[in-house]
Image 1 (cartoon, rainbow over the protein chains, first blue to last red):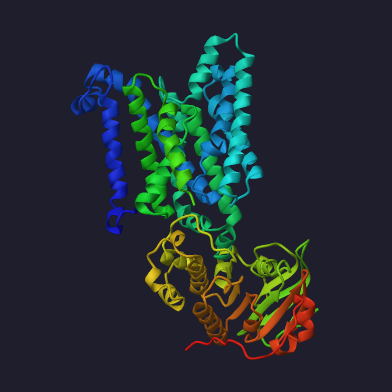
Image 2 (cartoon, each protein chain N blue to C red; image 1 turned 120 degrees about the vertical axis):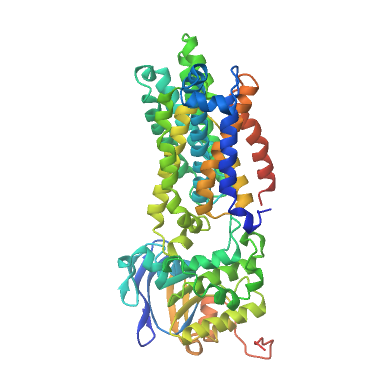
Length: 326
Length: 244
């Protein structure tokens, strides 16, 4: 099923081309339709209406969609190598829910009204707590069953935390609606402030690239990697820290967006094989394409939530994988 | 007890203890020998190999060529010793050749000797196949090829023969002897006592302790085999397998 070797080098340019195409469609589509020429004019402020639509509304949303996709796909790729299990991903393991729970607490307590920066900080705290719990529940190299069960337990626990927060403040309808909407994931009404929060994403993802070769060895066994000359403890710490930061940041700006970290690395592995030096940059671009396309579908369907679209695509895909796995 | 073979040390383990697994094991192996590690299930063979490879912390000391393992940087360890696990399970579909080439990681991925290692384990025709789509015995040979590719002077193999067919098992034994002739040391665990008989030395584990070490003819006496394995030994006509 893998692409012939001579084609694999076209995978990254191909994915980038796809990204540009989807970005152009995304920037052009909407109540005010813009063609490529008007998009160009708008970006350069030569067309007042187009400039307002692009700079105020569409551009932040498109950039965020790309960043969120890149973060979640890369985080999924890293977690799969870390746990040596192609069914691991930040949302199934509960790391996303951890970030979400942290953010919900921040919204409910009104901290985000004070400063939007409270959101990523709370999400980071929640995500790291969840990562710690996963590490205790499912040791590395744990079976798929154990890993998924740990995720189920953690997701249920964190859903309870979120539910408690919601039920506690039933009188604050507006805030609760905000939280519920946020939990379903979405990119409506995002501002440049959100883009600022998400800017470290490509940097963190690219920092993973030099670790690609080591991730190859780790993905085939921890003791094996150590005996082949890798400082496994250090590598594992770095991988997990990056994956958690990426997940938390994406969750902080887009809410809960599931299955990206599962679907994208899987498709890419089918296309170009399992080598991480090739997969890391591809996951970055491929994740961006996937979320951009899903967000476009949300807009086309008239306000469908992003998290619902990715789940509608990813859920059946996951079940198919589970059926096929071993 | 301290077991030893003469001349330069390749591996020295001094009163190593891993609580609940092995206790006070001391072992000294010289360069250029093939040593068999035998013992009943759960007697601590795998743990001892993990300790020897520096993968499991143990009290006591482990030295490779007179250097404490703990003092050797991670990357250099990959050039000094190769360890082959008992289980060969691969989640991802790397090609057979790329897994063997991982043995060159500590050498800066220079790819030297990878094809020779594949040929030595009869894997050349499988080189492009994904490792998660080949048989169990073939996967074990891939792990051995990777260990061979490291060119490490200390080779620690955990039951390398268990999953192999008769011909490939004999090939691997011949490979071990070839490595020993070029000065490497091979320590391998195994269950087939008849194979253990043709190695340079055997170490016998029992309930976490090393209970005997030396040339097979001296160590594998009927009394010891009865005590350790609970079997009676009889020499008689039987099936003998050899390379053509």
